[in-house]
Image (tube, rainbow, N blue to C red; front, side, top):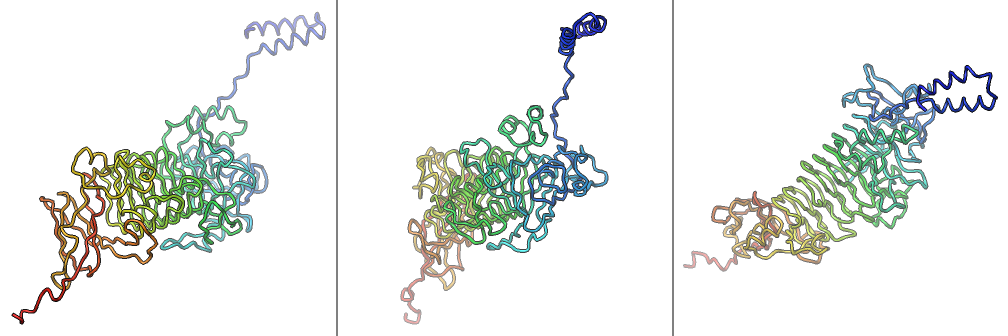
Length: 599
């Protein structure tokens, strides 16, 4: 029935009201109501309208959304996301929110980013989540665990790193499975000074959304957000991460300038949850192991310019840090990564996807299940510099650093105690111009640098390496080898003699245009290895350019008789070679040079 006819029916009903029975009148009235057009429903919102320029203090560890006397973390996130208007707060809750002068709810500038701080009661500083938190969709947001009283009263000290102990912890409630701790989709978000642990999908092993303490990815598209808002009764629930929200919004730009700093990930802030855990055979009193391990630490699914600095990342079933679709200009600096990967992805840091411009610098990476760093078919290159990578490979015998891809740089690292090679470079897919210089190696069960060939397709080759390559003089075979099988330097002798009390000259050949780096090879203090080059320590001492004829000559003064030397060559077009066969430094017998007085 059209709108005009419905009006006619109402008019007729009013005129002939006295001529119908009560039943007929009710029937006609019902028909007229059904004939009325539906009131246009409000269009579901297709935008996130975050509230910026506000400072919020969380004063309860409850996990509620209620108009009461306290403000919770869930409520604070809803406020900055713009899904919980300030008008809906109680008077006591509003006192926990300070609106800065000149704030505009629609502002999205980093300079106007909101902050969430903590003033939790003592002994009530663990926030046990009963369901997932909403995504963090407010640009420039700071979640600051260092604001809680007692932060930094104790410290975790590991080698040269010092990481303050957090007080505020975020973890699933007992018996509750939650996939992600904090999910970041906005630019400029900073997460600081928190303990986050226990986020996993043990009952859903094939879950499409990776579980992690911190998950970083693109925001939902307007279409997906509109559909979610239409489906969900609660505006808060519409901003929870789902598979549709993630995978149907892949055309959205990734968040930029996210900062993850000074957190304990995978580690409870106290020893209350310490227990023996068969998944982590490395007990460490500094790292109380939660009853439920997180799957991953930081999972950067889609991001740009993320900084992960000063964190302790330990005891995860899989990798401590992992990337996927994009992680361009990623900075991983001054973190401790320990005891990760004993029930999943074994590598402490695993890089996939577009990692252009990324840097791993100054980290302590130790006692993890597989490699310290593993790049798997990435686009772009990573610089790995000034890290200490030691005692990894506790579950799988792998190289300390395993590289696929082109133009990576491995510079000035200390790599030791590995049941495999120091740095292994895969041939498949193509790996070219990978530079490996200035590194110290010790106690390896393999080569310091291993360039794999395409024939090395076994599991061993993809974890440890395939051993020393023979001399290759055929281009097709070079093409099938990492770094185009750049020539290993060859010493002209296996012995070099002191011709003066303090000087010895090394002679050899290498690819013209390359730079040869000379290593001192000594017995290591800890001799627990038993394979090729067991119990040895490699220390770079100097370098020399190769002349146009492919020869080099260098005089050393800092070596002693009985020591061994090795060498690697680095060419700008090909990359770095495998190490040369060692040569020995010897003193000439005194009798070999009789005194001139005897003649």
